[in-house]
Length: 549
Image 1 (cartoon, rainbow, N blue to C red):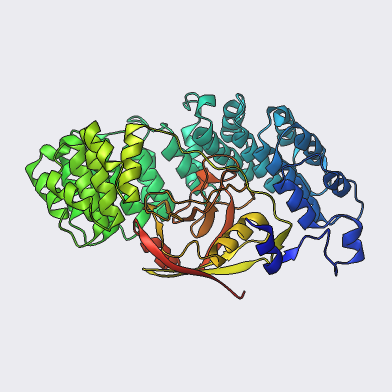
Image 2 (image 1 turned 90 degrees about the vertical axis):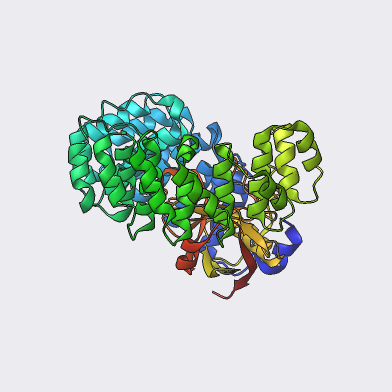
């Protein structure tokens, strides 16, 4: 980001601003805290000034603690830890969250000790969640004990959510989950306060088996659509034949999450012809999402079925290029790809066609052909060939210099896509992520960019200039993690790891609780969520603009 640009459009940081109250200026303005947090300087005197200020508002103290958590490291953690004993629950909650995102092992004992005596249910939830997010070697044991024994619903909810984060981001610190009491989990699955978290935990672990699945199968019809989608996934992972009728019965669900997970679950029944019949059924549906999901689910060996092979070949001539491209990629997996069509698509202007074509030629492992394709004037073709010849991990650019100014927030951004308009409200407590997004919008960066990564019932990710995920900016921005959960409509910053954001963003199209406390949420869709749900791979952003709040 460039200083001059934001200085013209923005609000100069509180350190240099006029017009703030005497009481506020006597301590520290939140913008000063945001600035030094983005500089990743926990030792800066502004943090000590804030923490030692008698007149600091609870809101600014919360910002200070969470900002220190965003920085992380020994110095930041040392400053946060005492606030686990603060008299105000909201401050203890902020301290718990901050330690959870700082992920410093030295704070684990304090988190565990605080959990034993904390009276506030909301703080209990945040402490348990933090323990799981920290990835400590003892976290699974402690969280499992809470789930099995605790009476506080919020503490249990936090433990379930924390265990989910542990299983997602710290698999090396987990072992068997068999010590979890399934009767308790069934109870929590039947409780609206813990239903979604419990369903996610079941979907992301291997707790269910032939001997215990019946009560979970019986409760399925009573669940919310999002929880039902997760439980279908969990049940199907057992690969029990008696569950196939349940999976098949949800293929026509009106809820996209349930339908998508039912289709995907057929992949668990690799050698069962009924699964092939289910995929054929999904391929016959009119909606693109069902057809794409079915194509992505098909196993290579299933193409030995003449009926399925014919159906997939027919999709090569579908009117939708995403369906066409997935059909060619499915055939390529089974060594049934059409070489002439792949060659033809090498010259296509459609990024979906190009992605499918290069996938075909990469599968052939013809080095000479790939060398030639690496010289293509089409970036997707050249990128794919070069990566196949010399695989290189994607590396984030160096972090940008922190700006001296941030724009007026919250702000509203309007994305005009080929499917319709999506209106996003940008948050004030993620000022530098929001500022980066605004600057890119104002500079026209997002005009004619692609939603290059669309995963039904998960996310629609945009910000690619090319259509394969490349064409990003030449800098990185730092994370601004917050309490917010990745619920449908929230807008997050795509990263390659800590402090590696840039231009790519994603719209959550389902509850993605496993991303919480690890990806910055800097906005939410306030209009056009129906458009976001309908986005397809490589749908374009025609234009983007900032509009008056």
